[in-house]
Image 1: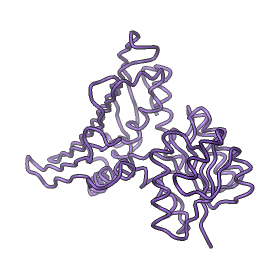
Image 2: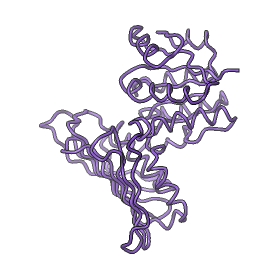
Image 3: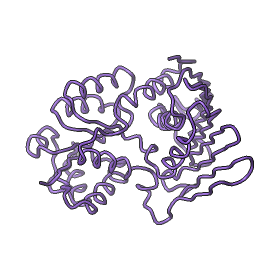
Image 4: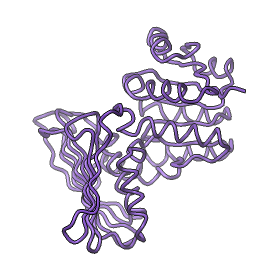
Length: 327
């Protein structure tokens, strides 16, 4: 029997990253059926259907789910709509992969968690950095050490011309990636804001100083109007340092690089695969493949809604310009 997939949301991110990932996954797994896609704009849904090989297009997600009865649903909606749509799909009993962030604040994320628990259905949040091949490689290498062996992490998150009034829904990627690499929950985070009102309301450089339950410290720097588009991480342990350039959006650091140094000597110098698509290098293919692989194998997906709650709560602090949060 075919494993059928439906997609809700055919906007720019879905079209650029998720659509190619679904098509590639279906090409590799003949039992997977790209059943239907849905968008409020019928023309956009139809264009998405044609571009990525879905069988049917809809403009009403409830009508689509009632007609198709898919084995899984992927939700790619604006963050303002994510909670309501996600809860509705979960309450209907469909396994769900949803784009980050899973809600605008802790309350919305908890609503999603409660809906999934009540329905008893698998779920996963699309924090794509967790599935970037080089991030996954760094995570594997760090797991050779206990979490308390990590001394300090630094994450530099630079963008060009991003004058978003609310950058927190993008900054959550860095917040979540550092927590993922640390292998521990945040214990306390202090925030510093360099407001740039001359560039527009809400535009600011954001600096986070954090402590983890493991004892590690971290420094996260978000500069949305810099001269470079990169994400770079440094992880320091006793006698070991890891330097990671993440190949986001096929930008300056693509295809990415991971260095592992021990007392000044190179242990490993790994580059991303230049032939991989930006969806693969950026983790978009990996997050979708992980979700679908787990469902097809009868496993609970990794990276479920509860795993994203703390990241959502910290990002909400940025939105409200809070000075500190403790857990």
